[in-house]
Image (cartoon, rainbow, N blue to C red):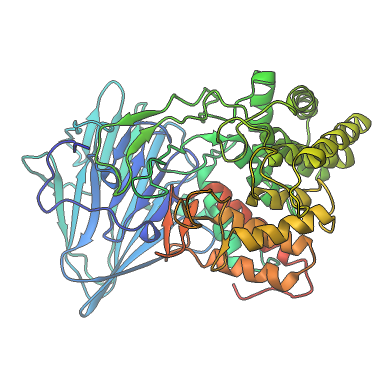
Length: 591
């Protein structure tokens, strides 16, 4: 693939392995921060807007805060927040850069806060900025105004960068600022990108105080969970991916390859209703959380608007996901840049069942409205009409009679009948019984485990979840046989793959799915094996890098994260496991 525009000598930040990137998010947009203080990816003002910084995928735009002497990198999140601190240690000095997207967030205006703070000694730091005009070769030409801010005021985008009045611009349009902040001092940089007129120049201290208060008042402490720190962090990631009052995008990035040169490169900056359900189930384990209410609200809005034409996912504003398109960029090594997503036009039956499980969770907290109850009825109608029709399924493959899709609906119907007072319980249970009977007649293997589909051999790791969700008891012979089959056929070194393929050994076609590993934890816990459940939980959550983020897949042999980052449903399952494990008699583990 060709590369857009010339690289700027000395200003290029090559892609790093995914485990080294930190994530900043405020619900409307998100940034990835690399170990050299580089913003490798950021779209603004919202998730699927054109990127302002795209070096992660070979595009233009860069924003780096980097020491100019040899250093060792580290970093950490402030507890219960997405406030990240990059830390660089050099001979005789250490410096941190505190980074966050300002909160509470404005849907039309991104505010990226960066504060350089030496801990001891002093290090020379170079700051560079160039804002891209999307995925093409053009960049924004900022000018310095009378107040010392660097600004751009165009028809589609307003930009302001403050704290860099002494920056100089080179022939490539890159702004460069050289800093040497004394120990005990600090230097604030504030970047704003908006699709509307900007307000007065903000005070950095005021923005930081508001952001600290936002996270302190938003993230529960989860002290009673099996892993309080990781549970808080998972919740913060879900909050950072979810627009206040709106939907949760599946991930922040595009085109991160699941396998080098395998062609599986996707754009996940959209709201998948299934993922939304997983997040709602996780945050609703113990409390009626705002994220649960938001998951229900966005699901109800889409169901009432689209009814029988319900899609798997939508843009943040409710519009359809764009058709998939390949962009002529170099891409992240091993991958390519894809915008839009091929799920547009698919029907995924399992989503209906997952959403019924979400509504049942909200009902247990008495948090359903009249509109939500109408949506429940429409989901039941949709399942009734289409449960026997082939669909794309949880893994978004070719249309088939996927067993998981049917069992997810069985689970949703059963818990709806049990937990939603105004639900037509007789109809729900009768429909669930009929679907389960048909699946048992068509989709059981010789050993009694569930097959992926009647005409597709082998077991599927997604089939671990239906007994957990209530489709049938965990000690049912079909559940136990499926648990044994997954453990025997889909596990390598403590990680779980989705399914096997006839011509490719396990682990060669794709990485292990971290969500499936957490599903194994829940399945073992439901089956009564607490020790195995804890083992699976600890193994999966250890796959992250220093920032504690998880992507969709894990390459077991190379010990690397694969796919887009961070993946919302993986953090949702981590959070659910941490809470459910705490209900055992094993107590809590160290945070």
